[in-house]
Length: 153
Image 1: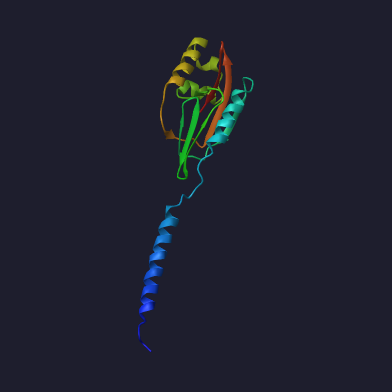
Image 2: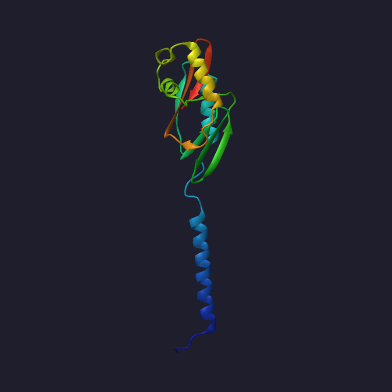
């Protein structure tokens, strides 16, 4: 009555091993979906192809992002995604560009149209790499003094 069957021991060891393996697979799965870089790029492209004065906001579900004016890359626990733009845009890397993307007129921020043009050119060539992603991305199409750009920040 109190005998131990050899089959029972193997059964419990096998069941324990399978349980540990399944637990390892489940804990290794990502807890969130990868970010949607394609939709973010489409939002930027929509404003870029709209008339000056156009502005939109998009919520980013990412922990980090990289934007060089031609491609947007987003990263979170679910993975990394990238998408290219149809037309180039300007990353808001300086305080002045951040002020413009947040609603200030370029005339109120810059001394001249040439200063605005120089700042947008520098922002296009600089590369910050990965940085913390904002909760909300703002995209604004601005034209002033011969410079027609879309600023993203």
